[in-house]
Amino acid sequence: MAEEKESAQDLARQEREASKSVDLGTSRWVLLGCVVAYLVALFLPFAADASGWQVLVPGEASRQAQVKVTEHLFVWFSFLGLAVLTSLVVATKRFALAAPGWMATTIALILSLLAVWLRRSSATYDAGLHHGPGIYLAIAAVAVAVFAYIPVVVRRTPAQRELAERLRNADQYDDVARAQASAAISRGEDNPLLVDDRRARAAERHRRHE
Image 1 (cartoon, rainbow, N blue to C red):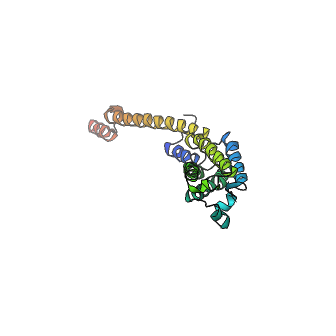
Image 2: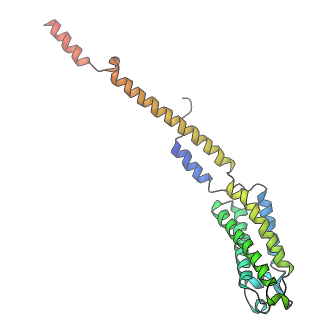
Image 3: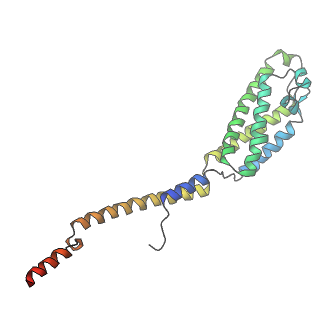
């Protein structure tokens, strides 16, 4: 053949390398917008007069606002998922960061629903310690990020799809090559033209000349 066929092992190795990256596409700008919106939300009131960063780092302000455990957990998971991991995903396009980023934001979204429900159903809400605009902006950023992550984590990149196709072709070629080699060996064992009988013929000629 004019071109050497790439081995299945080489293509499989290339496919593994390609799977370490993600194709962000338009999700890149959506995720970046979520990060910016979330960082802005941290400086707005989350619970009563306590801002998001004051809930992130518990102190006197969060105690006066009677911040619940679910609210602390929401801010911690959302900060990890958006401010940290999503920022790194946008910068590096690494699957090893995208997968935990998606999981962290999904957990944060669930916690946000619990946080809102618990405050609204508690005596804290009746005392006038309501949620501020910051937490709702943060929840919106987290919710959008969760759905923007789905095609990023699930979808294959163009390089992965190309390598997968080449790997299938290489596997088919290897199967055909093995079958042809096996058939050639079998024919060689039975083909009298390929039997080395030079010694026998030399002995026959020697007997004739005696």
